[in-house]
Image (tube, rainbow, N blue to C red; front, side, top):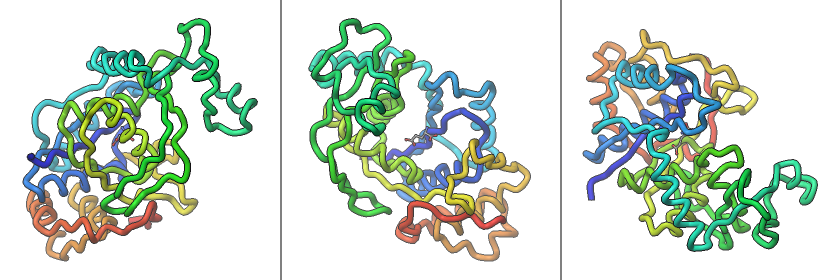
Length: 291
Ligand code: GLU
């Protein structure tokens, strides 16, 4: 089976150095395996989508020398496919409607962890309800970078369709990874907690399980992940090679000094040839030194 990887940005703002790490690591791993690398725009969470951000993200990827296979897919075009998966789960009684607000859950449980209330007390009306997936077992998996992952309690019944009418990230990403035949997922460690949920849905929907590798995320001095919320600056398209070299160092690769004088395509070709996923630090986060 041909290696198929992907980069799946949410168009909530421009790409920043943290996004470059995920794009680069997934790209180099795919290319080093002579595999395919796809780009998917995760634009389901309409209130958070920033107008023009998708086009800007794709342009930035091009400016950084990334080449992807096939057309870019947009999750907003695929609602009926997510609906089919949701219907299948509900009709097999693997998911159920839930009318609990976050506040109600907190009042009842003293935490944000869902207690399965609506599984036992089904709401009278389905309108305005979320849909939750039924989870009963512990899920463990081996991460190529972070090592064996074992949950010490079953994952909670998590939301796959939101009360505000949107399909949840966990459902859409699982359906799309299977539909696009993604078999290697290289992404930031901030998504490590989502992986058992996605494996759970893969099992319920009869999908194959991809191989996972979660890279450390870049953080500021306070340990917060670089993101729009922590005011990470947009990638500078006039400094592409320098930023790629910086990202390679962050990922534990050892870019040679000569790369500073290479063209961008030569720099990426070097990175593919010397890619070593085992050299990536086995850490969840690393403070990003300023330049
Ligand atoms: N769209 C997600 C994000 O930008 C990434 C999803 C994934 O890689 O699974 O954080």
